[in-house]
Image (cartoon, rainbow, N blue to C red; front, side, top):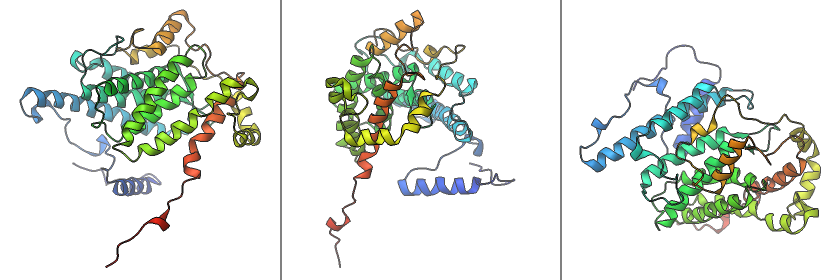
Length: 354
């Protein structure tokens, strides 16, 4: 591997690299690798044993490496962009489309029917990375604070729930990696907004139930899932009061949330006056999902049908939909509560002495 250490460094680049290495050291993870910094060839099937199982796993690994390279290029663009509302360059979106359409039939996500008859846990996990990328790219923040999930993000989140449902239905989730907590949390954000869209609400809540069950299963293996579970419980807690008392809609039945809303009027004004987030009419976002059909799930059926009728964004947030934003702001206020009331409890730790 040849690292490009020569030449003029951009201001702050050395500090950025030092931060990456410190983060990697603290988390016992490998340092982020930019393909431009090395000359190692992509893995091929010749790098793996010749037996059928190893060749299959090697093929999946090769596609995973290519996907990671695309995600890395997307991350570089997002990090360099000063305007977070700028659309992702078309060529990067096309790279994602090309990747998912290049998958051979044996590696495609088999969720185009209501039931998954052919299950390969490695194929399912491979698509979690892809779907999380789609979600992140389609969570817009026109007001600078609150994410607004566009149809591609909501479909991707529903597909994430479908993947986890398939895994849970087979009774063993211990093989899931720690990063699955991140995939689950990202999907939760998009589906939480879908709950406030009337024709998607029931299906979104069903998917959220699956994510909550998956997060509790992840707790058995990964301690990092504890924060995810606590966040899920806090974020969904306002639902009963919102449904029972329309006069408190947007307050979450929580006086603290109400006070927070009153103190953040300027934020709501910024959000409700922001231009409506839209999807580029020239880009067919269903190309992200060659494995999705109306039979995949309720959300997929509703959004695909709506897209065919030109009403895919019906019920989505708009500049004049202030109750929608009030409700969403009250919910996201609870997201950080697990951190505000967290105490390390160092006084309870007993250290052995020699």
